[in-house]
Length: 319
Length: 274
Image (cartoon, rainbow over all chains, first blue to last red; front, side):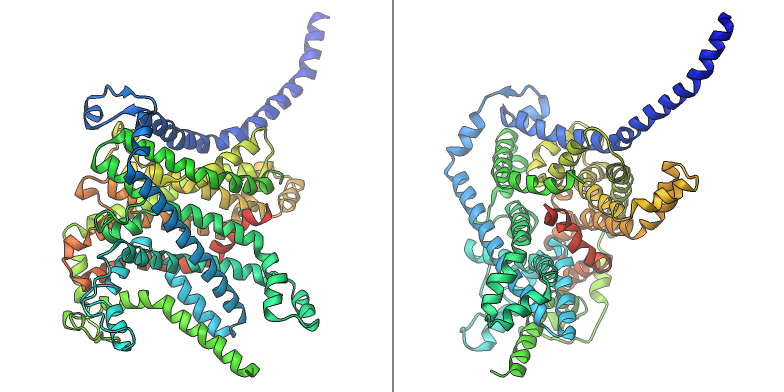
């Protein structure tokens, strides 16, 4: 009897247990599959983030790097940088530089997108290919090319300006003597490389507007400008927002183009926050100070980033 | 203005803008093929008699093959790591429901926006304590974390784009859940995997900042570090510099042309819906 019952219960339990193991495994599988990614994020992103905050609260110089024994100094590093007039200049400069780049990129990118829509198919292909060339050029190569274009003796820009005869003689004009002029060239480089992405995205957005809508407005006597203001612009506004956010993020932390152009020169006049953090940390070995600069940089960027990330994940999680 | 004249003005503007965009790249390539006499003139030569001298000089620089090999190793390892780890996560997110999925996606979004330029100091302090400091694996790890968030995001989009009905049909025909995914969806993912890999390739191939700071030993330089220090390598030899730049840019350009259309939709796709 007892044996029978045991057998009976075994028979009825076995498939159920098998099934529940399978179901448990099925529940675990997603976690196993995302595990490598999670571990990567925790180790390669989590640790540096904790480390930058920790270091920003410590006195950490070359001696500490070699011997250890860094001491906690509270917010002293932050007080040091905020009390440094150079740092304030650098912050303001970074924002002005970013704003100039973003505004120029977005405005010109919008104009090019509108232009793309009106071109005949051959010229449109030509312009698209030309823009892909600019877009694909690595930042480093772009920087090298622009130094060559604006070279004082053999650069083609000085030759072109001089031979137009309108702007006077630009022979041997050095573009890299003043901070403003150097920034102008860096901005030109960044805008040249950033417009294609903005223009292509907006062009795709414009194409998605129903043709009937625009035609109906034209039939009703709307001018080109009115069509743009009341139909095109509202339709591409969300896209414009995203592109502005992305441009702000990218242009705020530019390093390669500025550093390879003139290492922040002439005379430190093109030093922005990312260059400043690099100089403080890696050149002057003041790691605590550099970490504090990095923390400030991230916090300034956060102000812009939080609404963006929120809007980006909102639509995604529900799916 | 007549309609015809207006069209001509618009198309003319288009041609001028196209020339402005293409000119720097054209000037790089054309300079690379010029002899020294055609570079050292004030009046520029637009269509040179081509010579390969500059290219010979650029690739015969000491250690050029080492730098090339370093770049290839770092880039390939980054692509491999990001695609394997990213694919596992992307497939899970796209095809299963699990607790914490929302938090995981948020983590990916935050990671994608992380300002890595601001994390140089902690990465430096972190890597310094590991045995890979100053060696290629430290760069591979950094580029891996750079590219992983986008890889997950992008592959997830491609997988979601393949209707789950196809897999269900296969399951009705007796496939297991995983079997259906492997036999039906994965073979259709070719273009998505190629596009995402190319994105990772370009990121790792182009990266200068971390390579410049982390590779202290000259023999571990990647091509960008080498190009970035061209001024001292070549003096003001613009011909060799432009030849080196052309060689460095060429693979990026080829790959970029292949995925250009997807880059536009990929980068903003997630955002437009929100």
